[in-house]
Length: 397
Ligand SMILES: Cc1ncc(COP(=O)(O)O)c(C=O)c1O
Image (tube, rainbow, N blue to C red; front, side, top):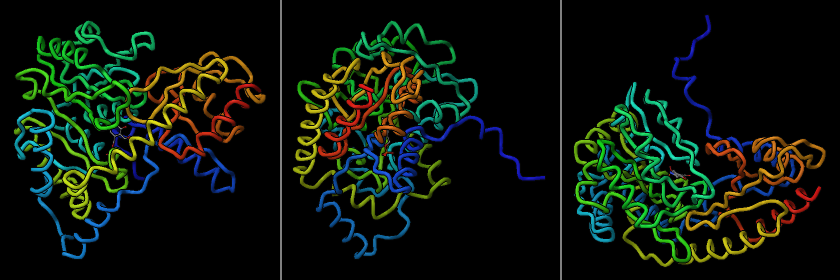
């Protein structure tokens, strides 16, 4: 009898963004040129001072196991960030360093959710949320938001979704995939609604430093007294410092929750990579000029992307206030034939774009929002220009 998978294996799908990226890679391996807008990772190299810190750490022999929750220096630096920048008094014991923000989210959900629990997820949501919730045995309760309401969850929508089983609300501002940034006032209104209930919050603030124009990110846990007792804040170095491959993220949680997350991690992975932790420390406490340089590039690309989208036939897109994604409404192309392929939904739209125009996007359905396609503009201006030329031709076909 062949080895059987556990029932759990039915709960999750491979990450759609990574799957789209893999399909693009497969075509590239066949020698085809793909204009790749699928992956959400900065195209910049990790800044030099951070690379140097990693080399130093290796040379100084900082290559052994670290405490499971991370090196004290990094935990303290993260705690200082929240205490200072966000005016949220934070102790290093509340901080757990993990193998990327995705791992932090997994640990956080494992800490507070289980069978029979419900987790409210406003859609469009980042691809991994619902599957990570399912892995804990809890049920994702997806609450759709609309383009007209700016893809934002309202306090009423939240309160209507709450049941006696609700354990958590998952928030993500700035958002992947929409780039939406909630204003402070909107988050305060949500915070007040949350405080009327017993529900906790997981606030994923991984794009906190990547905002444009008037948009400003807000640390949810700092908004109201008592909120930090029921909020787990997630962030990390992947996006801000172009460090996706180093795999360092963190959580800031009430001390008891943080302790469990560290214990869980001690059993699962022992600790996040020692060298990456020293590099992340330099990222946070070292010079920040490279962040400004990368952000200026993203801002320039965003302007250009919005201008080109406005010229695409029958495509609309709300300007992203943060992150590096344009979430395009492509639904007006459904039930049309593009390059001889009948497009009926966001998956067939993205597959037709990939196979005929060689443009890799991610289907909105992966984010719980049919009718849309996500374009990441964390790629070179040249690729963006050529990508839009190809999309224009594709949509005109
Ligand atoms: C909203 C959101 N949260 C978390 C993550 C995970 O970040 P990391 O690479 O640090 O695991 C991502 C990465 O795409 C993201 O978009």
